Length: 527
Image (spheres, rainbow, N blue to C red):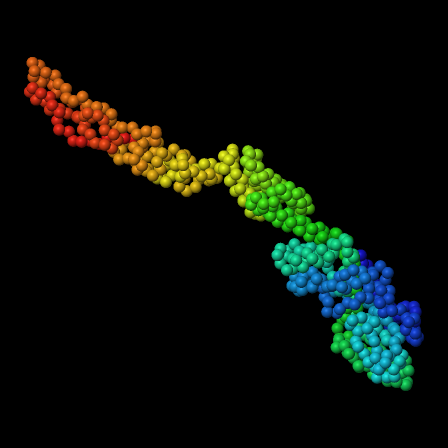
């Protein structure tokens, strides 16, 4: 937007600027100050029509540039307005220096001393010294300003740097908040279009002050500004030469900010970042409210707003797909919670949630946040599915208190994975005794713990022996016992489980008899 600085040597006198060589005689000084070009007009004319240098009030201490509307472009400075006064964060916006070739610039004006002999040089800029003259009031004074050793102080690409700094700053930092507010100001299409300093013209300022009646009065000037000093070698009677101690900012080139910000996509970045943040936070809020059963009737309206944020958030295709799937799952849960009884349609949404949570795109910038958002949604869906035993309900696990590998059908829970102390079956008929379980082949003389002898869990107590003995049997010849044996079994009747009875196993053979032997008592075992 700017053209290279052209070496100039200009002298402004009377009404028309006149080019003057270093040793050429100067035009006569006009006595009427009104007829002379103003200092600012001279600066702008010297820069040329296309360069648009303006004689702004450029503070000499300002090194990061400034911005504002065209009518007041020096309203704000970047360091304080965009970085919250953080000089380190604003360091990339420092002005760089470029020589201005052989530029020399002369300006001449006529002023009159005010009451008390004061001389007002404020028209030159904020850097001008405050002077007072010890001479007759209303004396006509000639003022000549020369810029020596000029240079351009160039501000780098503001829009690009603000964009980069915004990207690199921590999300919750004060610098990030300041940058966002600052960039919003530049991107506000309803406000005044802003301009900013692209270049600053700096030079060593030499001011020569002299009286017209050199023979009658000696002009003495007190220097009120510390950055100017009296050049004793060049000063003489009736004429004082003041030289700035350092280079001063005397003018600035302002550029409209809009095109630069559009090219750097700075506004677009902030808008996308804000939309991303809004999409993620709104989705999280909606998910939490839905899990809690709140605002179910307005979930659809809120979801439409979130979809709009997602569309504007600059998400990748993978991220956008995951976000939309997550939002659909939240809406399905809200719909199911409004029903009196959840339906199998819940299962499809639960499957969708699981696919997002198990996505391979774990390097996605939103994956971690979606995991936090969807975890309670998935748990709530699982609770509904488990309660209604829907097809997508978690597996049912049974408490195995006695650790025999068989679970208590009356003590179950659903879980995605096997909980400690639980098994996948509920076949145990008595979970207080590890000997009581399906398939038990052994029989026991003591009940299992609840007065039942059903150890094999077939629903009944099965006695080991129900055989009742018919006593001793024998074969005789002519009344003489030739063979004697016992009909093995319980004597009388089979006792109940755990009860005692006599069990006949042998008989005693005599010459004329076959009689029962004395048998020990035996306990009936069962399973």
